[in-house]
Length: 127
Image (cartoon, rainbow, N blue to C red; front, side, top):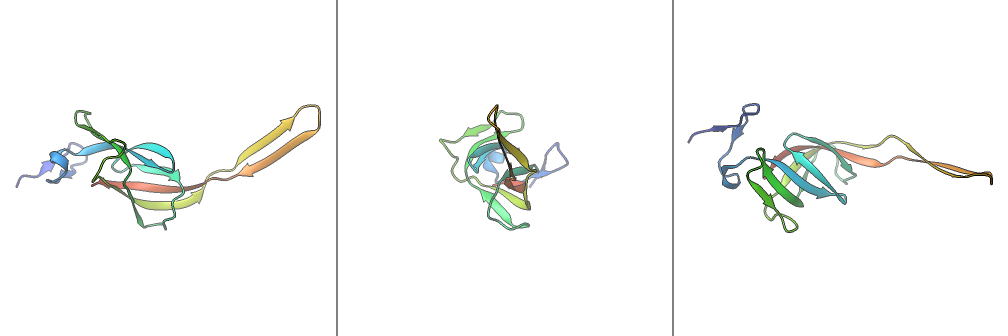
């Protein structure tokens, strides 16, 4: 059997991937938001209850596309039988933002701080 080599970093294409096409781009939904991702990307997403170093699987895939954009699969609303696996790199909190409420001429000023929790994941592959 002949090995198919991608033009990026000599990554071999494995037979059995949806019609021998290597899907490079995907749109996933997690935490109420949509993200455009590709293999090897690092994402900062809403907090997931997963420990660092563990794998997480995204199954809400809205779109898959090849790098050249010729082979595109669009879900209605999600694609069936497609999963994207990722590894959790970090659980953390973002920088503090200041929420200021101020009313002029009546001596009212209120300042609050907020730090949003996040999860940083590294995308491994599309299954």
